[in-house]
Structure formats: structure tokens, C-alpha cells
Length: 398
Image (cartoon, rainbow, N blue to C red; front, top):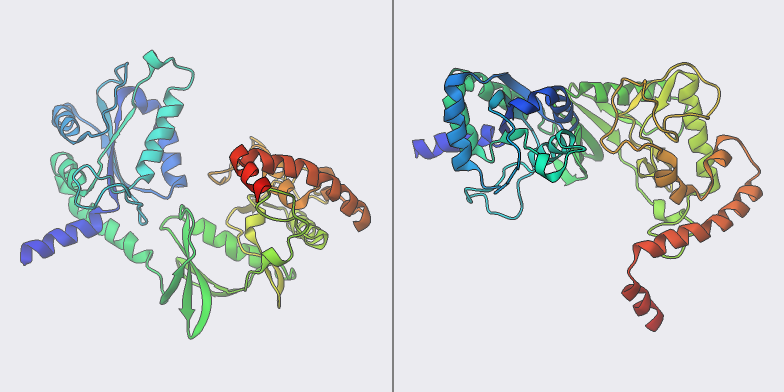
């Protein structure tokens, strides 16, 4: 029983821990790797160069553990750098059971490996490509690598991992999981002292996103669209819960579209919100239609300000704002994983039905309504491209 309990303890803290090993040709991408790890929610617990005596031991372990059957035409050199990373919200591979030896404990690591490999092999022919990164696939492999390379660091790594896991625990009883990617925070419906509320718990080391959410409420206290905070904790925020009935106000709707258009009055209010923060020197980076909800009693609400950050200056115009335009290359702050080159065309036009130019300034509502009626044509054609010809035939027959 004691051995089983001991193994269970190892599984608990090891489940979010992964060992990454960078080969010689991949060392130039270490900064890019660290940036990706941060953006996908990982914390680096330990890193060091790999010395000569450990290289062959690790190569043997990799050879035994590797189930990917990858064939890389070019050598990427010897193992050069060793990182131990931690994810408080790992996503296990769904295709295998937990007991399967080749199962990957965290598919986020596959995404990291793919992105680094793509960056390293950009512009290379198939014969010139190489793999810059190796990683441990599950807890058994991770513990094996740690014992071989940094046995004296295991206790420290374990304590940090346990502390991070503890900090990420939800402070109130959970009623439902509302999370999406969880790269920065998880979102849950909770019982907040007998009332339903929304709790956003941030990953360790992502306190800057929490601070931006709080700052947005301070700066936007006069805006009815800014959702209200009920409690601010060291690693979490509790928000007032709103009934989301957005589908009731999205109209008209183009054929083959998944949703209708935002009412013109909501577009006017979004303009006012973006301009309010710009006048204070801030940009609503990553503001998109998915951040909007409509409560029949409390009206339009904006629920996400994680990327609200200082802009270049206090600005009195909407032109160039970072919600509707590409973020300038000179910007050095945080950007979302899905940061587009131009936010408006792909993210906003399907909801506004208006060219960006007509959203920058106030126009008579009848003029905007007429333009939107014309915009239903390209929106319908865009929806048509997304559906298959067989589906269209079925719709015609029915």
C-alpha cells in the first residue's frame, strides 16, 4: 500500500512536468522556444547545458522511448540543452488509455515541437530538414530523464510543481467548466457565497494578465459595457455572471452563416469603448466579437481585457487601433497566440457587415443599414464556400 501511495504521489506532480532536450542545431532557437513555452502556459523549472557524460545516456533513453517513428534526413547534432518545464493544465492524448506506455501526457508539447521544427526548417527542402527538439512523452519517461541527469534537483522541481498546482486550484466550488485553451487562465462557473459567479484562475507567472483585467475595470469604471469584478485574489478574479442571449440580437443573418450581424447600436458602443481606452493611452488588443455577451437585463458586456496594454500615445481617433488593425511590429508587449495580421477582415466584418472605414467614424444608421444589406452578398458567398456541394444539394431537395 505504501508503494502504491508513493507512486500515486509521483504521478500527481509529474503529470504536468516534461523534459525537453534541444540538439546543437536547435540551440539558436532557444529564445523562440522559451517564448512559445510562455505563450502556451508552461513554466521553466530548470535548465542547463548537457555535458558529455550525459549525452550518450540520454540518447539511449530517447532511442528506447521514441515512438514517433520520425525520419529526419539531416542530422541535428548532439544533445546540447536540457529544460524541465511544467504545465498546471496538461491536455493528455485522447487516443490512448492512461496506462499505454507510448501515451503522451500533454499534447501541448507536440504543438511546441511542431512550431519550433517548422521555424527551424523554414525554407529548407525535405532533404535538408532536421528535428531540433526531443521531449519526454509521459511521467515514466520524465522521471527516468530526471534521475539520470539532475537527480539532485528532483526534490526542488517536485516542490515547485506542487506549489504551482496548489496556486492554480479554484478557490470556490466549481459548477461548470467554461474554459477554452487555458493558455493563461481557466474559466469556471462557481458557487460564490451562495451566488453563481464566474471565476478566472490564472496560471502561475501570468499575474500580468490578471493585473490588466483589474486595470481595465479601473479605467473603464464609467463604461456600462465593462463587466464587473466581485473579488480580486492573488491568482484569481471573480466576475459577476451574466445571462448571454447574444443570439437574440444578431440580425440580419446571411445564408450559410453561423450567426447574424451585430446591431448597429452595439457597433457604436464598441467604438466608444475602444476610443475611451485609446484616449487614456491604452489599446484593446485582441478585442473580438467572442468577448461580447448580451444580458437582457444589463445589456451589452465585454468580458475579456487580458491584452489591454499601453499604446504609443493618447489618441483621439479610432484609426490604427490595435483591435481593428494589425499590431505594429514595434510593439513589444504580449500578443495572443492567434494574433492576426489584420484583425478586422476575418474577425469583425462577419459580425459588423461594414467596411472598417465606416466603423471609424459616426455615420447615420440608415446609411449603415443600407451598406450592410449589400454586405450580405459577400457574407453569403463566404458561407457558401464553407459548405459542401452535397450539403447544398440536400438543402435543395428538402
